[in-house]
Amino acid sequence: MLPRSVVLLLWRLLALACLLLAAIGVVLPGLPTVPFLLVAAWAGGHGWPALERWLLAHPRYGPGIRRWREGGVIPRRAKWAATLMMSASALVIVFLTPMPTWAKVLVPGTMAIVALWMWGRPER
Image (cartoon, rainbow, N blue to C red):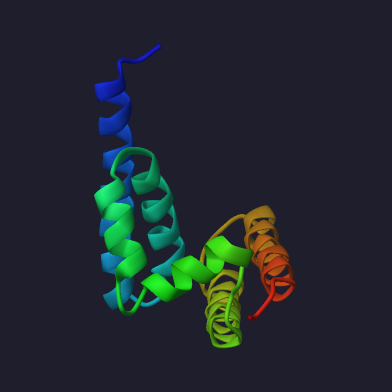
């Protein structure tokens, strides 16, 4: 068993890494922001309560995190944006990326499964 201080440090490192990826996702198309914020809030809840409170109170991202926690809600606008980005990515992978055939099938197939799951989530 790891000492509590090490466990807290690991939770904080995960939260910070996800915050960094979320910040990059704000400016880099194709890298999602919200999933990383969800993980950052989750990790913060385990090892950094002040960070979790800050994320939940954030004026822009807090409501989405709270809606997800309360009922797994994904707004329709976010569903459309994610679907369009996954579709564009799948087209690039299939037609422009030199990958093995199995990967050109597996990656878009995985995206399709994620899209089906996502569209099954509540919107309110």
